[in-house]
Length: 179
Ligand code: FER
Image (tube, rainbow, N blue to C red; front, side, top):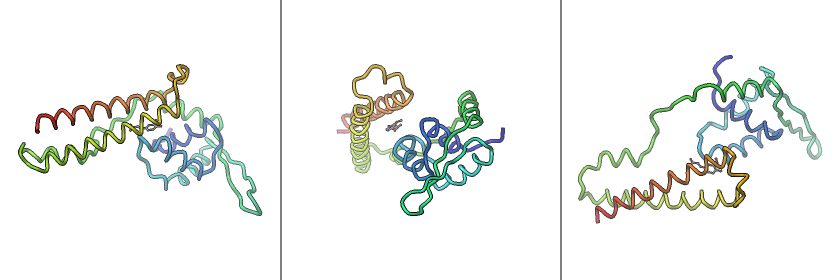
């Protein structure tokens, strides 16, 4: 199997739930996976062409309105096989994450630097907002149901909430020390 970019697997993963058009895939990516994984959605159509060529997906053409054609893609057994093989492979590691806050913090070594306080205060607000957003999202998507808590999506969200909680607490303790 040739090397594929992650977008192909994301497409296959999304199609496992339901058939989707290229446009639906883009929207679904942006509102779901895009929350924690960056990808160039401009590559969705080229990736679909490769997947079609490899007989991992197929499509149906629907006529929408007068004569607008809409293609919906669906996953077929070869695609499910590719997706399952990907899940079994060791995870690719991307050791360097870009975090401009950390980059600036690194260079602000004077504890009395006024920029330091401002930088940390702003960062704390960012993480509080993210935390609020994630908590609302978790409630909306999963509610109180114990059954849903087994899903991988729930766990990804749970981790993000714990990470944001930790970041916020860490920043606030820094602020306390500086003031
Ligand atoms: C989601 C909303 C947000 C989600 C993940 C996130 C997987 C964010 C993750 C992160 O910031 O790491 O529905 O589902």
